[in-house]
Image (cartoon, rainbow, N blue to C red):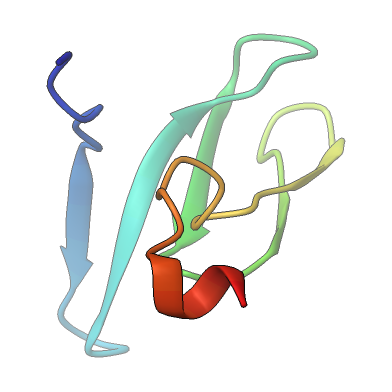
Length: 65
């Protein structure tokens, strides 16, 4: 079984929040994504990205019903 993907994250002391550091799929620029938020905007090109943080998790038999 492959290891789960690791996400580089940074802590913003002023806001007291943790952000994931992602590469924009359009331009390769940096995106700071609030962990577990769905929509994010690229700092370079302004493109928007929607993430589904739970997409890789497998359903348990109880959740499938």
